[in-house]
Image (cartoon, rainbow, N blue to C red):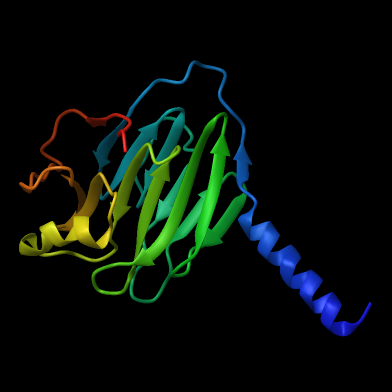
Length: 189
């Protein structure tokens, strides 16, 4: 086999390894429909169809399936699922599978070109976008245009995450003052 054939094979194997979804063990309990987002300190806990994600240092009484840390000016977003740890540079994605539910996490350019994370649950069941930079209130309507198909934005505001449902034309922000989790369900597209 020639050098170019070996190089092509190695490149193909690397791309195939990146494209293969990371499989997590399914839980034994029944999978609930819908999901929730709960503000926890500076981060949030996201639950959806058996998944538990801890974002930006949110503490959970249960072990999260995925730990996500947002990007900053010097560092790409980071993902930890089990023993797997990955940086998510701009335009990269990781696909995870737990039971029958898929989760795709993509790093896309945010409003200030710092990577924003787009969480795509199921077969486009529900999409959550998490910009890494603060966005001014007058720029909230542009989020739905910049991230088409996103249902909820988890924004940075005063050093913590707040929730902005994107399905309505009226900005309605929920944050630390919210006593109960924000609940959501599969969106029919």
